[in-house]
Every structure is written in structure tokens, then in C-alpha cells.
Length: 403
Image (cartoon, rainbow, N blue to C red; front, top):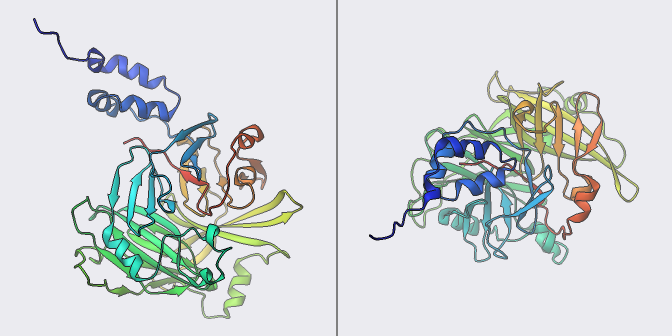
């Protein structure tokens, strides 16, 4: 009789597999378990989803740090093939050295090429370049458009879409593309050039941008059919204008801003982040001041966008509470979760990353209730991570999702 080629371990029943899966404390171990074979992947999909772990940190060497378990894991990303940008969840955007663009799943390594977006960036002179690495060698580089941020979202009528924010010292432009499977033609949108854009975020079917001048909030509606028609080869997409949703009311803009925002202290710097939280669009302002060689003082303000009255009539309003949620903010990407849904997360707290000095040392957790700051990562952990911080794109939040 011919020997059976069936693998007995692939027939492990749902009951035992459920017990094994429930005892795995690490999401990385759960991913490995599901990758063993198709039956295991199917059976574990049917299990109640575990609580979301604390986000990990994506590092510039292609690894992620699970600081809750003090473990690092290597992602499946190409090495030394152009700058890489976090795009939220498990996804990364690669701007390859030869100008190609793709989005890559950090867990599986599955890549989706975006040739239409690559051609669009090339036609607008947005070349693959890490600004922190090259700006110090070339003063003219300050005038070149460089990618500042990449964001992804799923829209009801489309596959995923990706938005790329590119800026120089005074101007910004956003490029938006669908992420259809390889072989299908994507649709692209180019936004009209604006003065400096601080951040972008997808919210309720629109892409919003926070403009530095007067804290204007502008948006483009992605449900109006602008991404339905595939791009024709060699034809530039139409340049779309933004709709302004929040603009200073009919008073002197400086008076409006002075009334809304505290006057900065001498030498204080500001970083801002847009993040969707519990059905609201928030603007988080981190104000920091360097004290001595290795210390930063820090304070936060949180504002919510009141958009109920329509375009140009919206307002920024101070948010007094995060309603029990935990915000994870950083220049590369931001997100919000109910603290009770995340293992180890604290409610009404802002987990923030910095991209200067030793980022792991200065990143921390800000409590909105008592205005206190706690270290994000233990000293023993960040001292063990030996890296050269030569990119503004890392560290970045990595929100592991098992699919």
C-alpha cells in the first residue's frame, strides 16, 4: 500500500486549535500559527478575535519593536530599494530607487504596484529621496518636492486608496490613487497646490488636509466619481481644487488664532496631527521645548472639527476629553482606539512618537486628565536598540492586523 502523503498536523480539529490559539500571548505567534497551512488559517479565522495588542514601532532597519514584550521582528520589506513610508495598519509605501511605487504588506510581503501613481510623481518632479539624508548635502533640495506622508483607506465603492503628501519649504501637493490588483489600471487625482500642509487624513469618504496658514481645513470628496475612471496612458489627470471647511470667521485671522490657541512660549515648537477618533476628526497639537541636552518639555492641545454647518462654516473646538480612548500619534501615521479594546492601553492618553535625537528615548505617553507624562519605552529597552536615526519617517506606529 502506498504511504499516505497527508500531513496529520494539518487535520488538527477546531477545539485543540482554539485552545492553542487562545494561549498565544504574542500576535506574531498567532500570525505564524495561521501561516502553517490553509486549514489552520481557516479554523483560526472562525475564532473570536483576540484583543488588539499595543501598536508596535516600525524601525528604520526594517524591523518592528513590540515594546510590550520587548521583542523585535523582521518585516518582509525590500532592502535598500528607495525610501519606505508607513501607510497605516500593516502597510508600507515604497518609492523605489528607479521611480516605481508600490504598497507592501509588512507581514506577508505581498506587493501591489502603482505604475500610474509612479508616473504622476515623476511628472511633478517628486523623486525618491529621504529628505533627512540628503538635505544636508544639497541646499537646493529644500526647493524640491519630497514625500512627507502617505495615508491609506478603504472606500465603499473602491479598492483601497492611497494619498501621498509631497512638500517643499513653502508649498504642498497631494496625489491620490486607487490600489487595484496588479494588471488593472488605477485612477488618480492630483490636488491643486497649496501653501504648507501639515497633515492629511481620510475621514467619512473625504481626504482632509490641515493647512498651516490660519489652521485652514480643506478636503476633497472621493465619493463624487473622481476615482471611477481609469487613467488613460500618457494623459494627465485633472487637477482638482479643495473645498475649504474650516476658515477663520469674519474677524482678523490673528485674533481668531489667538483666541483658539495658547500663545507659544519662547523657543517652543509645534507639531500637529490629524486623526479620526470615535466618529470625529481631531487635530492634536504637540508643543515642545528643548531643556538641556537630553530633555524635552511637552504639552498637548486637542481640537475637534465641527463640520455640521457645511463648507467654510466649520470651526475648531477644544476637546476636553478623549472619551476613554487612546490616541497614537506621530508624523508618519496616527490612529485612535477604545482603550478597553487594546491590551495595556490607558484611556484618555496620547501615545506620541518623536523623530529627532533618540526617538525611542523621547517618545512618551501624555495623560490628558492630569497632564502628566510617562516614558513609552523602558530605559533598558531603548538602550538595547542600536540604530542610526537618519530618516524622518521612522519610528512609525505599526498597527498589526491579522487578516
